[in-house]
Image (tube, rainbow, N blue to C red; front, side):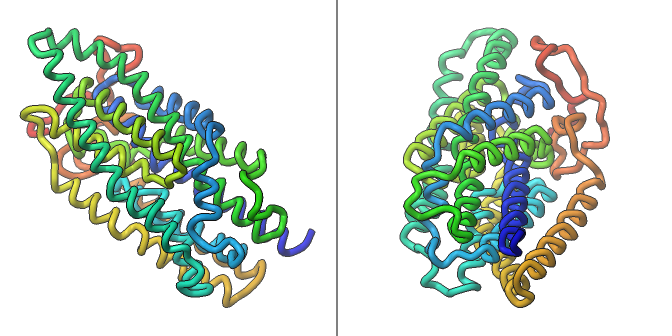
Length: 403
C-alpha cells in the first residue's frame, strides 16, 4: 500500500468524522421544536431524525457537486489541503457544540477548506463567485425568508384556532409536529450529508481515482456519508438542541409545526438548486419567526445575538484553523504530517468533550426550563410523564419560575 493511499484513507476517515459531528451538531435543526413542545420524547426524536437523514442523503447529489467543484479550484486541491479543511470544520463544530451555539456545520466545513486553500496557493485557488452566490448570499437570505414564512404561518395558525380549547388543539398539533419534524430531517439529509460527499469527492479527484468530469461521487461515498451523519444524529447533540428548543422562544405545538414546515420548504428548495445552505440558519430563522408570529410570545434576543455573532465568525474562524493545520501538516510533509495533524485534532476533541461533562446535558435534562444560560437548571434529570401523548412525549420534572 502506497503512502498516498494511506493518507487518502486518513482523509476519508476524517471526513466521515466531520459528517458525524455534522449529524449531532445539527440534530436540533430538525427536532428541537418537537422536543421542546413535547411532541416527541428526546430519544424517539433523534432516532426518527437519524433514520430520515439516512434516507434523505440518497435523494440528491446537487449540493455535493457544488462543494466538490464550485468553491475551490479542484485542480489545485491536495490531500493535505482537504484534510486541513476538515480539521477546521471539526474543531469549530465541537467548540460551538460545547457552548451550545447552533452555528453552521456547512460554513465550518467550507471555511476550513477555503482557509486551507488560501494557505496553500493564495487567493486564486478560491472560486469567489461561487462562494458568494452559493454560500454567502443564501446564508443572508435563508434565515430571513424562513423567519418570514414561519411568522406568517404562526400568525395564521393562531388565527384559525382562536377560541378553540387549547388542550385539544395543542394535542392535535403535537401529532402534526411528528410529520413536520420528519420532513425537516429528510430535508436535512438531502442538504448536509452531501457536503461531506463533496469533500471526499475532492479528495478522490486529488488522488486521481475520480475526475472533475464525473457528475456524482461513487456509491460507496454516498452510503458511507449517509450512515455517518445518521449515527451522529442519533447520538443527540443535546447541548445545541437545548439552545434551539428552550433558549430562543418558549415553543407551543402550533408554533413548532409552523417553524418546521417553514424550515423543510426552504431547505428542500435550496437543495434542488444545489445551494450549500446552512440548515442551522434556516431552523433558527424559523424558530424566531414562530415567536414573532405569536402575540405575546417572548423572544430571547440576547441568545439570538450571540448566535448571530457566531454565524459571522464561523467562516473566518474555521478558515483560520484550516489554514494553521495546513501549514503544520505541509511543513512536516507526507503521511507523518497528516498523522500529526490527526493527533492534534484528537487532543482538541478530547479536551472539548471533557469540558462538556461539567455538567453534562443529555436526553434526561435537555427539556428543563431555560434559566438564562445553557447549563442553568439542568441538574434536575427526572422527567415527568403524563401529557396527552404520554407514549411519545415527555416534559421536565417541573417548570421553574421565570422560565
